[in-house]
Image 1 (spheres, rainbow, N blue to C red):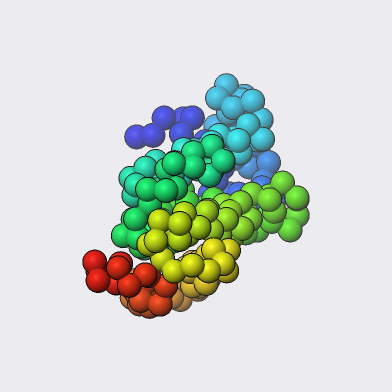
Image 2 (image 1 turned 60 degrees about the horizontal axis):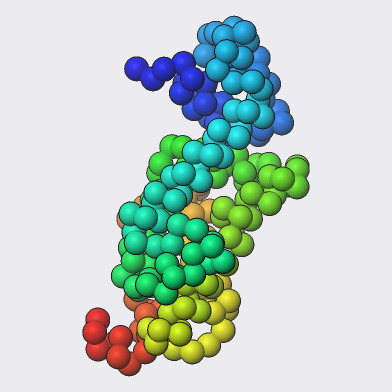
Length: 210
């Protein structure tokens, strides 16, 4: 059984993902758990404190997943060498895993839906949405593709444009997952997209090696 602190965090995220951060009070969270506000405050100083712990966990998970797939954990400016060692197979495997993570993992799904609801209400939330789900991933891929071009893994071109071309289907399929897009169909579409991308943009040397 989860301890009270963990239950508070997960219950708060569930409520934030359904109603939005601003619409949920500490009383709502405590009431959902059947505890007093005083009991909640023994674990978290405020609703904002709960949100910050949710954000910390997401950042930690993100770093762990990057490490798992042998991808950079930090920004290019902080760890340029890690971007120079990225292989195509790692990018492809990570892409499929990211779809399942953002659409099936309960913590990630709740976080994504919370940001989707709140992105227009507060600039802080809008920035987080862009950082985690749109502009941030594109910028990350741009740095990866630029270094892959330097390494001769993919053809020379505009890495920013290439990042948009690559990321757009993943972003769309994640959004569609909230309606009726079956996971297996989404994975098939992503796999076909990545293979077409590799065929189109990989250098001749890397075509032969694959």
